[in-house]
Image (cartoon, rainbow, N blue to C red; front, side):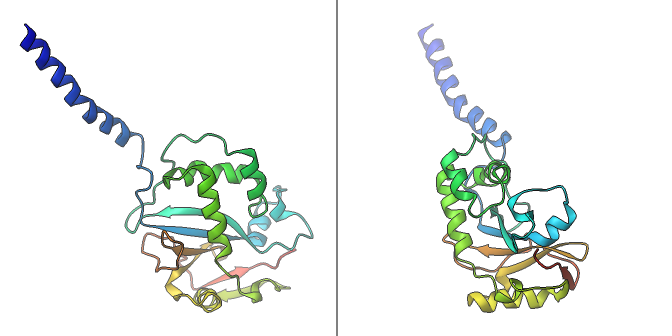
Length: 216
């Protein structure tokens, strides 16, 4: 009898880790299992033109906003990037207030934490410190800050201009577009936030040139 009870106890303990692993796997991608970061810099004038009801800071008339910090996303070298890896508590109010200096709305801040930050293995405060650090590490070429009319740019020229301004390899930059409109410049960074080559998994514009509206 005692041997039977002992056998059942050992069997139960042995199955707990397996069940835990099964539950963890079914809940999504394990945090911190990614290869590099993708920093997304959205072109606000094009976004605002397509979202006339948006009243966030990036679309405020007279703000003259150009590239806006959209987010810092964990990226896989191959395949789809990890997303929404764990339950996300609301971002602390102090963190939100601080990040509003760089991001256009509190709702975007919370969204970025839920969808991307939870996959980094970092606490929310540490994640947004890294977001800010990444954003400040990239220099936007002056030519985009002084646009006074709608222009069409070759996407390779945009990538090269960012590479030159940042003394970085040109393949560390990717252009994202919708039809022929510029959506964002995406910057590939390693886990130490150093420029690195983007992989095929990073989104890429399929046209040769994009339209860029001037800031207002």
